[in-house]
Length: 572
Image (cartoon, rainbow, N blue to C red; front, top):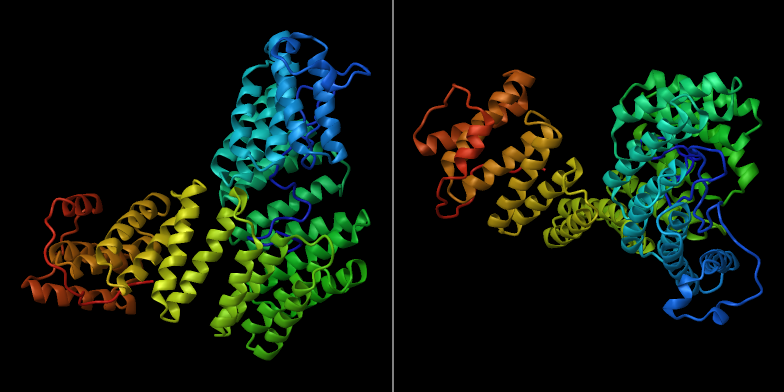
């Protein structure tokens, strides 16, 4: 997520949730600093030698040589650093770990060699093999810094696999170890707090992220100079949390203070990125003139410092396209979309496929709003092709495929819609996100596509699974959950389970009346649906409320009867 600071776009200076090997200088009990992926931890025991690995031999007895482990570990790091065959580095690292295990047993040396081994596995995309290696590295040492490093590296590995829940658990374990070693007011502890807060934001766990951000700000105010870069980074993340929670005034306040800090430190590009974030806030609260001013300021800086074909420029074009669409200036909106697409068609060196795919997805949403569905679908298909189907990208691809499914459904291509939703569901299950609210919503959409394809039994199962998830994640009174109840009632009616459908509709109507009042159009719609079923069943409305738990448990014991089409519609 690049320079745009919004709910979907974390701060550009945010440490990516990727593989790390924490600094391991002597004397530290824990470290908050993290570096980009590197298979070389900073602690190593190496002894100068002129022997080559081949002269050591590869038989098991040679592994008992106490000089072999440090030598092979150095060879593994040097091989990775030189860009040579990573499989050769992997072989060195495996043998080094075995040697340390035999010669010195559990301890710091073995833990650090396992960190290197796991890093090489991850660089080869073999994350499943890296996980047990890192778990072992945490078990074999009592050194606080090594355990902290192992926990954080394991968290990054899970993040690369798309397992954000497990990733967060590992970061929390690392944070506890660091707090015990350093206390809860050390600047390094603050850096780890912010790192964990970023993970919570990605998981949309906003309350947890806000607590950590506040703690980080307190520490940096105490230990850093006024208007420091560290405080600016904290405020940008805090602004992201506030924006996601709908607290736009607080978000603006944090962004303005962060911008002042960046100006004081001469960080022009960062100031421009914050201007984009400020523009996003103004756009959210419909202060369009101020949003345009903020976007144009950022655009001028990005063009002068990064060039007119940089993805940062394209991202501002997309924001302006969205703004002009919302203000009814459709020609200008489409023109900015085309400008962004021209940049993505000929990306400058260094542009990642993820950046392009993200940009195409955002442009697609605008084309969909402009009712150019075919063009929107073409862009989404291109975005999926750009993203490799790796564990770390599965959630992103699932989101795109779900959006494609919605578009296919809207244009009546129900078979294609069901396939897209099915692909998205499979990827979300594989990523460990089968309990999220988004997963429940995708199941609901897939159920609707199944209904259109006359696959009513399948739709019932999908709606029932969606109902369980949304009850857990959103609560039984949430609008998304009520929508699934309505669809479930319709499918029960379609297969002849009229009594079950009536009971669910009575509950829905009661909830909507309490929430919206009896005169609301949606309430009136539900009332008419219920009246039709009651008339057919020869009953009157039961005004006595029934608990949802009893209602849904009771329906599971009732026998299904012949299928028929529902007398009322479904809710998407």
